[in-house]
Structures are given as C-alpha cells and as structure tokens.
Length: 126
Image 1: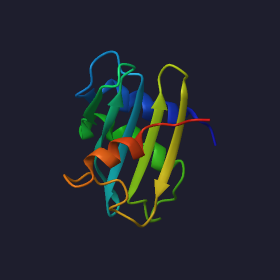
Image 2: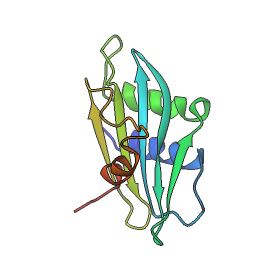
Image 3: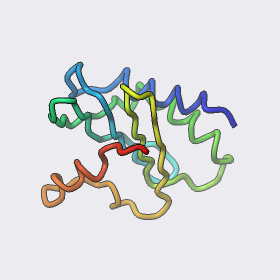
Image 4: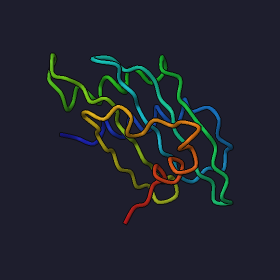
C-alpha cells in the first residue's frame, strides 16, 4: 500500500481548510463518518506563537480524497471507522493517522471538554 493516498488526503484537508491563519505549524483534523459515509471534519491548527484556531475542511471538496483513502484500507461493504484523526506537522513534514472504529465520542468537542480536547488532539511526534 502506498502513502500517496495519505499525502493526497492531507493535501486536500490543508488546501480546503478554513479558520486558520497562514502561519500555522501543525494540524489535527478529525474526519467523521456517519455509518458508511463521510460526514464532515473538525479540528485545530496550532501556530508557533501558541495560538490555536478551530478549523474545518469543506466536505464536498475533500470527499474524493477521503473516499480514496478509506478505499485503500477497506473493501466495499466493510464497516468504516466512526472517525479518523489526521495529525500533521507542516514544519517537520511528519504525520500520523489514527483510526477509531467504535467510540464516536472519542474526539468530539463539547463546551465541557474544549480546552482538554485542543491539547489532546495536538500533534506530538517522536
């Protein structure tokens, strides 16, 4: 399996991301699924000065890359994960993708957990 679909997925998320200033350094984006279909994105962009911006990528623009990515891991008819976390450090060029198969609430942001979730999702490589 090639990483091309992963690179294409990250590129689509970044190119269609709204909410971040240009100087962001790292990104955590959750791709949500509703049953067998992609339903949206949410996450955070982290800047070197400590600023954290809430971000999302337009679903219609990233759907082809999400579909290609999941098709590289799952056969037609297989259950998709409930969410995928994509973490990317633009300065280092490092990324990590984490699948969540059952816990739909794992990366959900609520008023009660927003501060904790911003840090929990922050990319920490190495």
